[in-house]
Length: 367
Image (tube, rainbow, N blue to C red; front, side, top):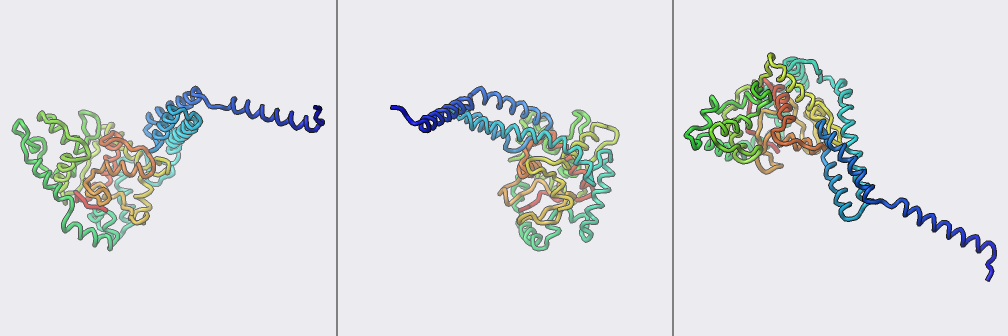
């Protein structure tokens, strides 16, 4: 039967459109090779991002999800996630470059300033910002600024939650090694927290107190302790307790350029933007010190290292300064570094040097 011209035209048009759609779906179908290509590009960017010490917190997880989707045959999803990871790694790399220009605009960051010049300028800033606060009170952080929180804190200090850890550290300090020696043979006394971190000329690196503790153990044929937990935290808490009231006196030797470089690396870390939130330590603890962020008061950078290790109610146990660094990095969605990493040791070197003259009052109790 002959169909009218219009009906033939409509049928032909429908057939043509259907063919185009079918062809388009076929042509645009994502293959495993497409996934592998994008994934490989993301991996290359991941390596570059890691090599310059700046990765975002969740990007590796996104890349892993891409691989899982590919393994399940969900190629479109896999490509989408791999592209997302690519974008994040690219932005993290660009963030490092952008920091170079940004740092020039930061009033407290002078790449050529000596450690002594930094301390003079930065301590003067905080004294001017909090004129009624005696120097020793900076060791108490935001509890020195908020009268209500101070009352609560003082109540906690009547029965300090860190004392069982201090007592355990006292026992460990006095317990002899298998060879009959003890920590007393490595340290002049237990009140040495004021000198750490220190510059080690032998290794050409910053040495923290936990590293010295493990060096002592290894020198006496004992196994090193795990960082950031257990016996190591107990020993740190005891040493901090024995050092209370003594002023911080970290040294950056002027005759060793390697020490100055480590200090400067720590300073650069402190002032550089990191993570998806594009924030630096400086943003919370300089101009915004004393202000509220949700229910918390932001403490000033001055005196911030004096009370570690600390018992935090949020954690429900003791934690180290490096644990706090890791937590801050996670909060701005930056990938944290390992305990006792070179990055955190250099950061601690700069961070603690800022508080030279402020008395040690660790271990601390914080919310």
